[in-house]
Image (cartoon, rainbow, N blue to C red):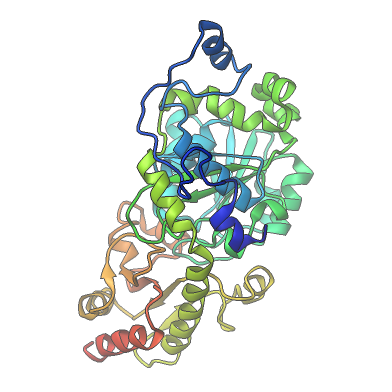
Length: 410
């Protein structure tokens, strides 16, 4: 199937018994089995099956299979939120004494999660610009993960996936990529050397802000056979390319129980069907608004990777020729002017989310990055006069008209 067809039909056929075309919602905490031996085999990992909703659920599994298909992965594990997915993926690999190299231009919550790993004696090096040279200089014998976002939020720095993937392959280090902003519609990181892909499905995949969720896609890497990952020895021997997913499902995934709910799975599957259509509109509206803002006298600067003025333009053109998603930022010269823009828009919602069909606006320094130091904010590309805009799929004329009237009042 091609991508847009997979969004609707991937890994699912109408229910054989009823003919229902939508995935049913299974609201059951536990699952009965005919014999004691049958249940023992499932618990022992010898057979497939459901035992308890904290571990797996048919509705959730349908969503996981759809996402794995879209990303070209061998398996996926859904979680209760994007942050839960990141934590589970990291801690499935890391232990005290290990080291992570991460991009500094991360979402504030992710930056803080990584920073706080020091409480578990895990060291993290943040790179303001992640490239081949900076990454090679940061890698140590204890480095287990290289972590970055395809496009940073809200720094909007564009990761050269292929170049970073080559370094990780050379050093046999797991390359973990958060692709929330770009989605598999724009890029599939596994094709460029990523080993694990993560999404906050609450954003573009859902599209309407009606459910939380996260998902981890396993690319089936053979790197876990490397001596860096001795904890995976038994899993690589028994499950081979499924080692990461097998370890996650039988370890921290099972023990923590941060599973996606059946209802959220259903809502995400519904949202996914229009992902390609929405992403095209997000990208088109974002570049239109970015070009308008770039020419406005009250705007100090605009950051959108598909603008020719962006330092990331060439990299964005390489991976995102049709538009670098729907997020842009602009600086207005002062916090007061930034607040004034936010207070005077009428169409935009002032809230801490992205990827909605509706246009959203936010002041990152006083919200999602409020607990970061000034130095950390600068690393993350966050300034007091910066406004982040998640461009929706409304008519572009209405989006620009609303921004224009708000700027007029500053």
